[in-house]
Amino acid sequence: MDVHDLLRVAGMAGDPDTAIDAAAHAYPLADDRPVRGRAALLAALGAQRKGLAADAILWCERALREVPGDREALACRGWAHATLGRLDEALADLDAAVAGDACVPAAARLHRASALRARGRTEEALAELDRIVDDQDTGAAALRLRGSIWLDDGDPARAATDLTAAARRGDRAALDALLGMGDLPDDPAVGLTHLRALTAADDGAADLEARVLVDRLLARPDLDPAVRAAALAERASLVDTPAEAADVLAEAVRLAPDDPVLLTDRGRALFGADRDDEARTVLERAVALGHGGGRPEWILGDRCA
Image (cartoon, rainbow, N blue to C red; front, side, top):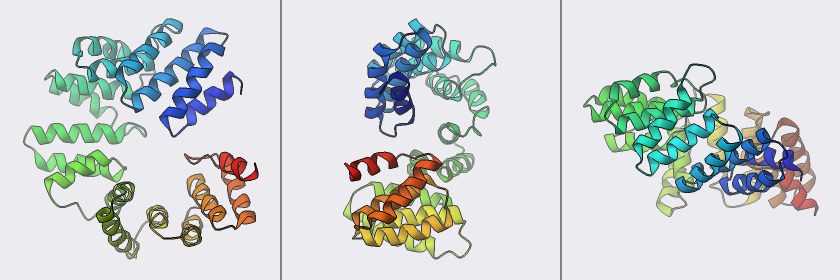
């Protein structure tokens, strides 16, 4: 692969190790500074996803040598300094990342809010969070952080509102906070987040709880089709054979025919059930739509190899 192929893999990889490896290979191959800076930034963001603060700092510094003042690199390095307890260095980077209002990454505001909260500057933290709660990528984390601030300030009602909104958007840490406060709200989207947490736990007791919860969710006649499709995808992970999973996922795909993740999951299950022709058709459609985390072209390549 050339440098642009490697950067594409690094930018789209669901697995942070794959992202880091691809970006690290791209970095020395890049023949201009912006591309080298992008490679270093993607490696830093991969390290951030793994919680490797020291590695993130090293890659951010390389990115900033190539593209001085890059806001994403400053935000990532600020997160890393804060993670290591270096709040002065963190706020210096994060203040620079949000300076001016042009093209400020939402992640910079999120990390700055967290550092400000750690410094006891709560009003400033809340002001940053208010600006990003509707952001597609960071809004759920912003709602969760704002909810935790309300909880610490002795306002459980406002905390529950924000934490519920975050859990509805898939934030599992917000879900844990709600569980710590008592019963979960009767909200299908929150139930879906709970279901996903249970199926990811790989635990016998959690598996039994997940089976009960998915049945309860799917029994709701008013369930939104997108939530129903996602719940069916979780049910597919609980069945015993690839053939059963393929059948469950067929219903999910019927509800969400253009979801590349569901198509990829169904293609994988069809291959497992030795229904290869159907699998190839489904995976080729997933590739055409743009893959999710399952890399359908890789599954096709492995099967055809």
